[in-house]
Length: 602
Image (cartoon, rainbow, N blue to C red; front, side):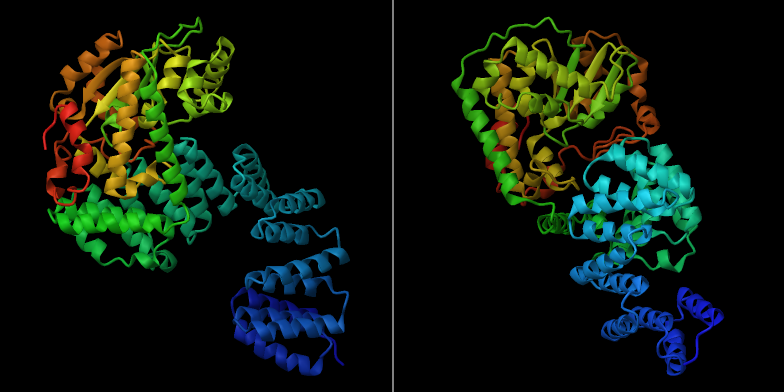
């Protein structure tokens, strides 16, 4: 029995790395005839067979290697890798554990076990093994990265950020760590830092599709369309050029350049079933808008319906939570009807001149937000969980009756929770007015009024049929509220309930409210904004008319209107519903009273 030289083994290993799997299978067969007990050869052959999708043959070869050497840590580890890659997680676990028992100081094995347990959703065990791998070899970057992935999965963003940075300190050009850290920065509105990190990731791995498309998305969301176009035009990698996602971004550039016919033609050539799932709704939304802008309204409506059906089939959609949300609104409405006019006690706590900007989604709140934040004495908080933090601090105050019976101590607890969250996003010492913009804070008016009796409200209305239709047509991130927008009738019922809650609250709590009509805002921005600034006790600031510059300078606009508020005032969205009057027939009776109340017509 001849021994296989290290030179031959290294040559075979290089061929494996170079993707020459069939060559390795053929050569190891010949060599094993002369050296049948070589565990190294058996491992190389089994790995090559596995890479050729010959799973059973690979397993059989590994088992022969184990018979030859029952204490081979390498064989158990490689067999574990094969089982893991083929989805047999229990067998992978069994083999990794055997290997680790043979060598409990192997940091690579500890890291593998961590990844296996993460895949099995045993996050406690995953964390334990990642930390074990780090403890065994503090110069090994991969377990830091994997620990970061785990912590991000568990919503421990701070720990994830630290772990990614540690991985990068060990491997400064680690593409996956750069990509994931960039995504954290992007989520926290550090978009410029995110863009630079995505670029670094691509520089080190030009075929890294995830980083490439993340960079495309960042450019588009930041309204850097020239940069996006240049990025798309620079691609030469077949790996990226073959993907349907790149065709989507080319079509998106055409739309943003107002080349609607070209965009429509590009969309018609895209097979969305081959796209990344995270971009499918964006594509269907784009296709629908392309049809709409070429005047093909039935095709547009059909595409919007297709988008919403995709949402309904997704894991993010939860029919029960959607219905529970609506039921809570109906209950709150009934509670408000039962109470008399309320005289709220005024607390001494400074309210920092809080203003709550509310309205049904897609009614113009983002446009008004952008105009107001252009004023030198205004800071705007865009759709952050300040009010929900307040609710969490006093969870037992979950009905109108309980809100009204809040003690001074309850109010102080709620105020402190609110300001603790608020100061993460705004400088409370550096503005006269703080505007908290979250449209559906409409329904939290009773709690806001009880905790901040001096707070003001700015309510933005739009033709109810336009508002509901626009929500139905929007590519929202799903939650319990937005899940009601996937059907026109459901959206109309949501509108009816939230409007009645705010209407009753406005009357019974004597809310200090300024009403703005979206249609009037786009017709005469200067007059409407002057009236609003008077309500807020602010002097006129010419910067409010340059709101587009403010929008362009922002790191990122977090609402679906990010591409619209950088445009000049336009009227195309005004009374858009008339193009879809037939489709809106079922919800028109639900919305008719609000159409009349707000002074519109059908």
